[in-house]
Length: 158
Image (cartoon, rainbow, N blue to C red; front, side, top):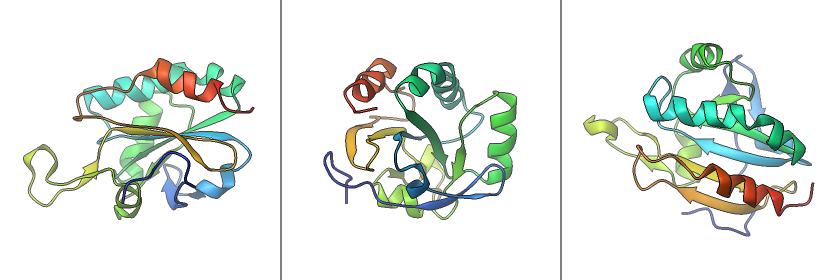
């Protein structure tokens, strides 16, 4: 079932790249950018995560926390984060529960029968955890509009 604007974002608890459990609920009181991405170390995903990293001061000014989510193992996410100097948590949805909750699972990814990855998708949540913006990429090669994300955040209470 699709996550709709105006509804409470489904909560989740996932491991981050430091093997710590992180729940969406711990970020209440901050605006949140959930950035689902198909796979670490791929060209478009690297570009996207680095663009979000480079926007961190703007996000901080808007009381926003970025969370990157993929189905990659935490060990891969750790190296990906370190190599790209990412300054926000990367969360591993290795069970695919969260990508299914948010209806952003892409099955048979890259022609690999049985392999499910995350679609490239962005959800902006207000500080109460309500979805205020959604974008789901038409295919994994398309990046989100970063100006749209900032614009969505600018219209939320800080």
